[in-house]
Length: 323
Ligand code: NCD
Image (cartoon, rainbow, N blue to C red; front, side, top):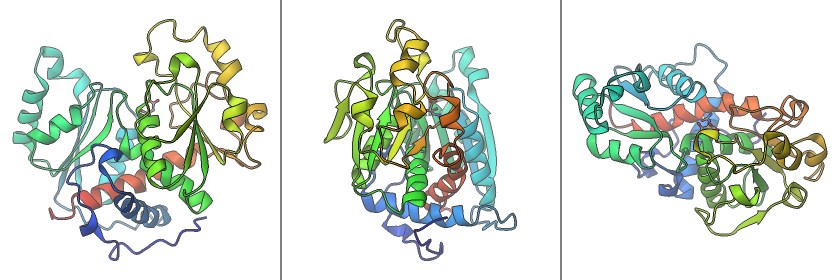
C-alpha cells in the first residue's frame, strides 16, 4: 500500500506544469515530475473503483498513432483516456497509408484535419518523430516511445511504482541492466531517477554500454556482481533485437549466464531488493522465471497496472485547458 499521501485531484497544482507536450523527461523539472506522480498516485489509489470516472475529458478526442508494435502501451493509453471520459481513436499506422509511401507530414496533417484531436499519442521508430508531430498539430503530443531516445510515460510509471513501494526515490540506489545502448526506457529512467535524487548503477556488457549517458553522475559496471551491490531496485531491460546489430551478443544463453537476473545474482543486491522489467520480457534471456514470478520481489505486474493511472495523470495535466 502507498506510504505517500495522495492529494485529491482538485489540489494538484496543474498550472505549475509548464510544458505543453510530453516529448521527453529531459524537458521536465523535478517539480513537474512530482506534479504528475502526485496525481498518478491519487488515480492509482482509486483505480479499482469501477464507478470512479472523473469524466474530465468528456467530448475530447485522443488519437493514438502507433508506427511501431505495441500492445500494453497502446492499451494502457486507451484505458486511461476512457477512464477520463475521452473518445479514443486508435490508428495502427503500420498497416495503413505509410506503406503506400505517404510521408509522416502528410499522414499527420490528414488525421489532424479529419479528426481535430485534443491530444495525440505517438510511437515511432525514428528519433525525434514525436517532436516533429508536435510542430504540425495544435494540441498536446505525448511521446509513447521514439527509437532509443525516450519513453517518458514508462519512466513515470516506473517512478510511481518505486515511490508507492519504497515511499520515495531520493537516495535509493537503482541498477538498470542489460541492453542500455538501444533502450529508450533506460534513457528516460536515467534522466528521471537522477532528477529525483537516486543513485544509478548501469550494468551492461561492453558491446551494449553506450559511450555517453543522457545525464551525469552515472556509475557503470560490466558485471552484475559489482553493479548490484548496494541496490534497492534492479531494473532489467529487454534486449532490443530490432535495433541491435548482429553479433553484439555472443548468444542468448551466454547473455543469460552473465547478465540474466537469477536468484543468485539478485542476492548480490540489498536484502529485499525489488525487481522491475518494462515488458515484454524474454524469459530465460534477461530474467529467470522464478525471479520474474516471485511475488515478494517482482514489481513487474504493478508496473503494468501503474501505466493506466500515470497516463491518466499525464492526459489530465496536458489537456487541462481544453475542456
Ligand atoms: C518498452 C518499449 O516499447 O520501449 N516496452 C513498453 O513500452 N512496454 C520496452 C521494450 O520494448 O523493450
